[in-house]
Amino acid sequence: MDIKNTKPKTKNELIEEVKELYEENEKLNQTLEQRIKERTVELEKTNKGLEEFAYVATHDLKGPLINLGCLIDMMGSEAIAEKKGKELFSKLKNSIGQLHKTVFTLNDIIELKSSLKDKKERMNFEELFNEIKSSIAKQLEAAQASIKQDFLQCSEIDYPPLHLRSIMQNLLTNAVKYKDPNKALKIEVKTTESNGRVCLTVKDNGLGFDAKKYGIKVMRLFTRLHTHVEGKGVGMYIVKSIIDSHGGKIEVESKPNKGALFKIYLNEGKNE
Image (cartoon, rainbow, N blue to C red; front, side, top):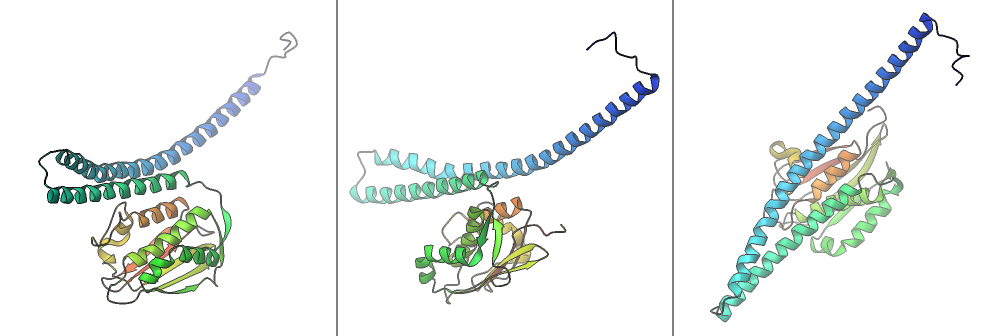
C-alpha cells in the first residue's frame, strides 16, 4: 500500500467504518452465543445420558465380575467335592452369561451413539418389516404370533436404514418378549402421515403395564417392568434415543394385562 497516496478519512467516514465494524462484531457475538447455547444443550443432554449410562453399566458389570472372582477362587480349592464343583461351575457359567449379555448390550448402545448422524435413504416400510419378520421367524412362531400390518397410508420415509430397522425390530421383539403366556400373541402395525410427520403405531395384546404410573419411563436405560423376562431392557431405550435424535416423540398407552400401544412419531412435522 502506498501510504503517501492514501487520502485521510473524514470524521464521518471513520465513524461509519467503526459503526460497521461494531455491527459486524455484534452479529458474530450473537451467532457465537447461539452456537454456545445450542452446544450447551446438546452437551447437557449427552452428559446426562452418559452419567446414567456409566452408573448403570458400572453397577451391572460389577456384580458378575465380583462373582466370577469369588467362584474362581473357590474352584481352585483342592477340597471341593465333585457335586459342589458342579454347582460352582453352574454358577460360574451363569455369571459369565450375565456379563456376556451386559457387554453386548453396551456395545449395541455405543454403536447406536456413533450412528446417530447416519445419512437418510428412501426406505419402504413393508419391505423392511417383512425382512425383520423373517429374521425373527422362530421367535414369532414360538409366541404363536399373528401380525396385521398396514402401510398403505404411508409406505415410505427418508430415514437412516439402521435407525428404522432398529426401531421396528425392537418394537416387534418387545411385543414378543412381553406376550401374555395365557393367549396367542396378536400384533398390529401401521403407519400414518399428517403434515409431514410420520407415525409408526405398534399395538399388542400382551402383559401391558400401568402407563399412567410409568409412562415414558419404560424407555429409560436398563428398565424392565416384568422381571421374569430375560434381557437388559435396553431395546426401548435405543428406540427413544433414535427418535430424540430426529426430533420425533413417543406416546404410550397401556394397562396391566391389557396389552400396549406405542405411537412412534419418527420425525418433526413441517410446521414444527
